[in-house]
Amino acid sequence: MKVFNLNLFRKCIIVLFLICFPVGTIYLINRAEAQEAEKDYTKSRSGKKDDIKSNYYGYCSPCHGDTGKGDGPLAETLEQGVEPRDHTSAEYFSQKTDEDIFNVIKFGGAKAGFSEAMPPFDGQLSDDEMHGLVKYIRILCKCKFKK
Ligand code: HEC
Image: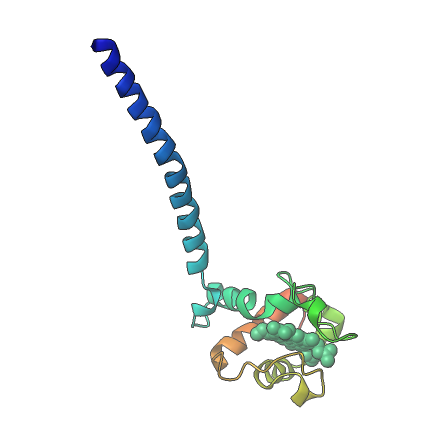
């Protein structure tokens, strides 16, 4: 009788383990995915430094790349011959005033005579946030406007 009980106990442990292990694993994976999904970069709404960076990652990196080199995942999907500007180019951006940059971000590429592949962010981002992004581009290019 004792032996039987022990066996039953073991079986229960094994069955429990077989159930808990996959269920637990699935739970942990789901939770990790949910946490990742909650990191919505587009939710930050101030001009603070961390938020500026999040805005850049959320709105600009898909085309301009995480480091601003113009190599984001969407870059390849654009019309042939159109490439997102390299934000790290000091040579290029020292020719541009902060206002030039701001206007392209706010009103889009087409309004400034560039490709319409550069979308306007008016309405999606506040002016403060867009001024923040201008500053961020200045950090990326390590440059200022030079006449
Ligand atoms: C859908 C892709 C895409 C997204 C998203 C995007 N850009 Fe662009 N951007 C472009 C392309 C393409 C160009 C180059 C246009 C051209 O060469 O005619 C460009 C050009 C620019 C320029 C250069 C303008 C100039 O004077 O030459 C700036 C500045 C810029 N983008 C800033 C941003 C910022 C800031 C964001 C995020 C808020 C952003 N872009 C999001 C595609 C994108």
